Image 1 (cartoon, rainbow, N blue to C red):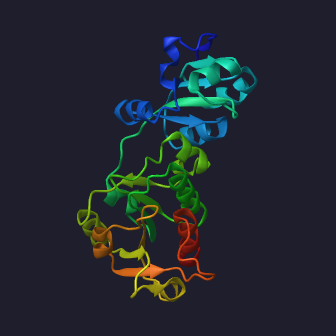
Image 2: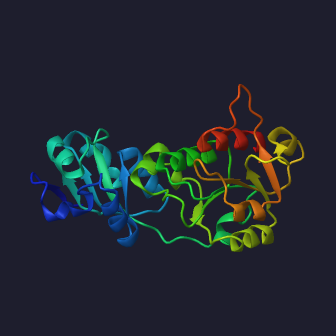
Image 3: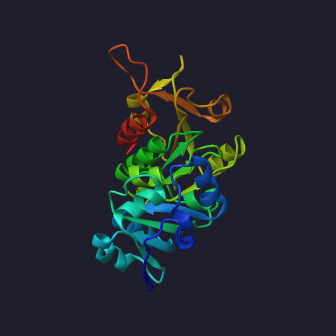
Length: 263
């Protein structure tokens, strides 16, 4: 593989990594350009193990040996720490970034086939919460994750980092709008359980005690919760009983509690 040492942050070879703090620029680079950014040798390695291909790797000298085994045939750009920070707009503490080719999304029916527990994330816009929900899904036995059309991208750098690379471990794809998504889930035999506050909601422990064979657990956006159309698509509304005057948990924490109960 080519190893190229670069001292100029304006070098055109580094265009994929430039100004990563600019959200608008990331939207151009990642979805439209078919790329996403993976950070750290461990995360890059997990992406490669999942079949993703790096277009290039950006690394500081002291982490070069860690990156070489996962770079494949992609060019490896070695830069000083100050150049990496000038380039990206933040300190690259983990020493390595990779511009990865974004894989084609798979059909929903294919991703959920054979699964017993699926997580559905509707319109969650915070990348940290998406990453944390993926980590919970991986650690607590979910078979797949579906994300709504307006949900934050699981392959954004922060989502990948917070998930500790589990976005590459758990099968996932983007689902269509309601009610089409509900039709696909029902056709596959899933009972749709909406985690929400409602007068007729079933406590989580009661629902878990008589758990349907196949469950699609829906979680909604921060603040607003699940949309009206999502709640209409649900077979059961489930709630986590709370104490101390607290009405609900952060969506990522709620996903972990519910997945543990339904595991």
